[in-house]
Image 1 (cartoon, rainbow, N blue to C red):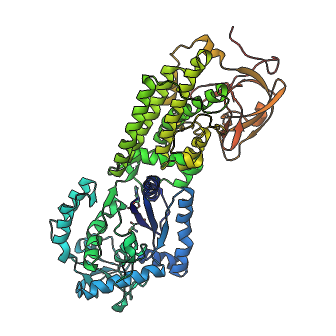
Image 2 (cartoon, protein in one colour; image 1 turned 135 degrees about the vertical axis):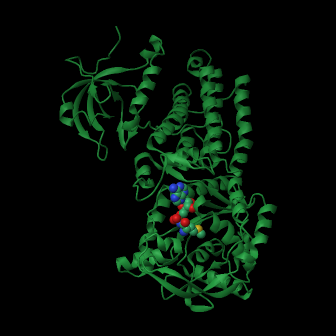
Image 3 (cartoon, rainbow, N blue to C red; image 1 turned 90 degrees about the horizontal axis):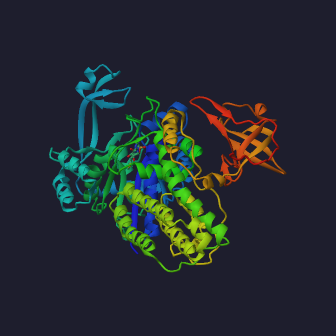
Length: 621
Ligand code: MSP
């Protein structure tokens, strides 16, 4: 067993959490879960950056103390992490006492080593922006209240460590990842490195940690923030206890904070005599379609809206599948729905439905025995075996989207195996062979689910239960006789957003060119049903809940027709339904069947019948 310490950036407490913050944190969570599953001892850290000018200003605007302001804002992140099932081991806030102590300890060491000097800086200062500005900025006319200011500050001799840092990057090829980011940093280091101003006079900013060697100053916010990564290990100067976790295996960051992490941070550590982190991995940006997400453009994706609408695991899946680590990725709702429907609802969901239904119907709901293996089973097993080395390799090399895709290829291969062996036919004349096929398909499905578990911890657990894999034994092969759990649709299909509907419709029309046999049609139990009552589904604009009389029986269905029919218009009609669909839960409401409707570009017309016998079968004639 080895240890694995990983971190996310600590996010600005003032920010409203968005998909970017959620992404880095989910990525860290997936890696943490993966390493835990592999038997590593994991320490996963995330937290908040709470000092600095913006926080001070925001608190002043609200007329509250900055600490109260932080305490009020922090839970927004904590709540989001809880909702996203983030399994962090620690949550650090830079306003905690444990942190101030470490920052001051490290500053004192750096100072004692002779790496801090005082310097007076004279330049143009914008009072409204509260920062020094360049001559060019002053000429731009965009800054108000400009004055010449002379200010004494403390500087860290970053330049002293420039050569050592370049050597370190060359000697440790994995230190900065991916390679193009490493080259970017090496390019930056070709210019002489300046020294870093690490103080702010209290006369203009006091929301920060006091410099231990001059109480009239506070620490520059980045010098303070980066140190969080060692604070959380229990670091204290002259105490070796923190070495259980430090150096950390990987700092996950976005490309926007590359220089601070790969130049400031390592040189600070060198000066303080603390080992450097093993690697820093910078991922790209999530764009909204083609453009940058920004508050002013109003295109920032709110993760809470998404998970409320579509569930946590599908969002985690999409983010991991869609971003090739290191590159930018584009987020659109259409691509989300497409990815979800094709990978999760179709490939994975249908496989789960098929194997469980057949086992339920023909093997009394318990895992059948695997008899004689034929080539096809052997092929499937070999593929599964190969995955068990390919996937760890992808994950350890931060190729997460490839790991997901390879796993889904496997799921598709299991579906193909089912189509070739046709267990639904075998059950009629060769039950033993049908059992073998179903055992092998379900066992392969179990392997795929275990690989997807770090990404979708909740839904994979549900499906594992459905296929009989016991909680503490999900990593062991299924055994004959294990009872299946209760069935539910793990990934109900999502309706396409309007913009994408047309394309989808043509796809469906193309599909309907394929001819089916009359026996296939006969499997669909079409019936007439009388609408006794109807009402809107709360919180869903498109859904109506209908109570139906079908022959002797009453049943409830949910239909996506609320934009076209009011509840009153539906009551009293006799409609046509598919009566033998598996029950589904749509927006928390159970639906036992679906109604037939003709749909055009903008219209939906429910198939309505005149005076038939209620509950009678609809047949082709
Ligand atoms: N507080 C600093 C980090 C200090 S770490 C010692 C900070 N905070 S932040 O709130 O701005 O968060 C920045 C991080 O959020 C990025 O590095 C990245 O991980 C994530 N993202 C923010 N927007 C993003 C996208 N649009 N896309 C992907 N991730 C981005 O900087």
